Amino acid sequence: MSSLEDLPLRDDLRGEKPYGAPQLDVPVQLNTNENPYGPSPELVRALGDAVAAAAGELNRYPDRDAMALRAGLAAYLSAESGVDLDASRVWAANGSNEIILQILQAFGGPGRTALGFEPSYSMHPTITKVSNTRWVNAFRDSDFGLEAERAVTAIAEYRPDVVFLTSPNNPTGTALDHDAIKAVLDVAPGMVVVDEAYGEFRREGTPSALELLAGNPRLIVTRTMSKAFALAGARLGYLAADPAVLEALLLVRMPYHLSTVTQAVARTALSFSGELLGYVGRLREERDSTVAWLRAEGFKVADSDANFVLFGEFPDRDAVWRRMLEAGVLIRVVGPPAWLRVTVGTPEEMAAFRDALKESV
Ligand SMILES: *Cc1c(COP(=O)(O)O)cnc(C)c1O
Image 1 (cartoon, rainbow, N blue to C red):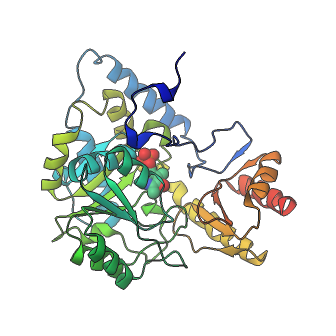
Image 2: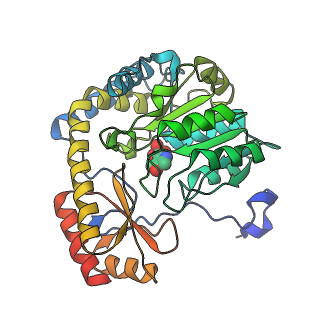
Image 3: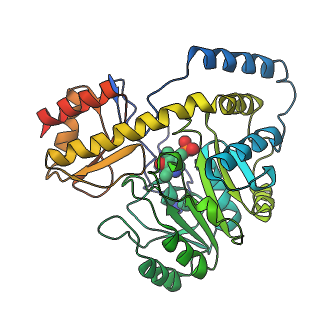
């Protein structure tokens, strides 16, 4: 057996660590922002039928451009946001992580720069580096927001080819208002990506960047079926953008990247969107009561427009995390050094979380 050091690995990957959120078999899993509500028996049956039908065609390559799925996603997005979209403006891939990779393959690369404001989604810098693009962190404000003027200054300084804005932001839960996004669009010399993986969980009155697509051909809004649609296992991410952006992505995507099975599963889930998104309301309520409870217990809590809550501050957060795990509750060590993140689960799971936290601090 050889060791990694002996292999002719790319120099810029030496010493890098792979993505590794713990996947542990514990009773209460509140660490990767999954949706706790699994599919109903009706949906399971419909998914089985759709996969069986797809199985009969597996000797053929899938629809390379996933037209039917993209039309379904566009119809869903139009209904959700009130913004008129069709398949020519919606693109899909294996999770929004693959969407982000395709964006960087098309608009980043050697000699180019991507800029983001951390703490934010760790995969933005990771995928940036994997695509051989330089990463610049311009930092969020101390309240985890992003003041338009400071964002503009950072963009003027670094002239990035790609800007990442995450709204609602992971791991803080913070949503951006249109002012900050518009200010970035006004000055950014390249593409502006607004990652709305948690868009459906935003609170009443919080806008979506989809509303800014008209007249902004360099804006890309990414979404995923992993969180609100409770479909993390199926791997389906998507984006909305100007049709010219999709032309660019066609240059870098692998042919037939979305399998026939994935397309069938995602289309079936879309036809059950009423059921799947029915749980979003419950999760938003549970999120708000979790925020209120943590504050009443004296913790610092970031306002959240997502399906998780960032709270602190702990002089030794690793010790708290470990004690919680021993009590059967898995949360996440992520974000600023003294904070922890908990994904919003079922009422029973959140009761277990509250009990475990009280015993662990
Ligand atoms: C979970 C998450 C994603 C989603 O990833 P998938 O590959 O679609 O599962 C994207 N962006 C952010 C900010 C996330 O937290």
